Image (cartoon, helix red, strand yellow):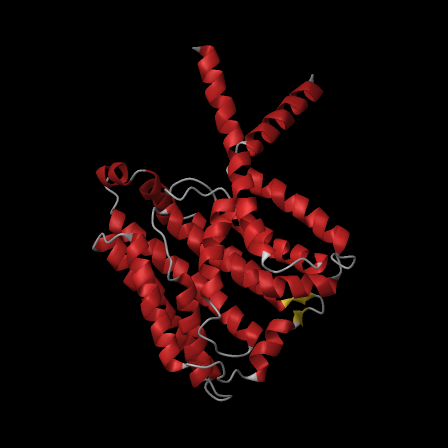
Length: 330
């Protein structure tokens, strides 16, 4: 009797997992890992693990940031330019003596630019998120180009050697930074403000009628997301060890792609940050597959679009099944 109960519980658990918006991304991720391991013999070695997470970590962090913002019913197209601004500012002003101070100033700059300004304009002033962040993206990129018009600057050796190093003799520091970022998100996800983000994203008028200050929640989402944008920018700085105004541009659309692949609805209020992280890993592993297969880098754009369509199609299957059941019931 107990075996039957356990079997029913297992089946119910599996059925519940398949209904999660992030489940299609999980399936695609497993498939790509198998493909990557097949064409890259040393994929599961520690050296490969360290190399991969040096490049995966910034993308996963910006996917978390974009996911939080989109869940609130907003959008951030200035995310990549904010990373570029942080990168150029820190690389231009850093020296061996003032490195930590410049990082702190860069953090404040990122929070004000990417978090406060966007949050106030979109939340309080109710400006369209798409147009607002497109405009602020141009502003931040323009400032970055003024600060550092050509690639260069200076990054202390201790910064980029730390990012490439390991802790406790085995754990890559880039992976440790990612775990710290996930822990910060996990703590925030247990707060009331995080639940309100879902409420505002799914039904802003209903949330307002329930007494929730919707503009403050949107501001909170952008402000909290700016923390992950800062950490991602710091990782990019340590990874490239130079300043360049184009260094953050790819992260904007990649973060949106990761969110869509991960099953977060662009209308807000539906999906999970775990799905956004799956989506970022999918994009990172896809780059690996293209590189080790010897295919043209131009195929990355094609396959990225194909995977987004595939994820959307897989995610639509449960919806179609449920709608068919309703019709049959009628």
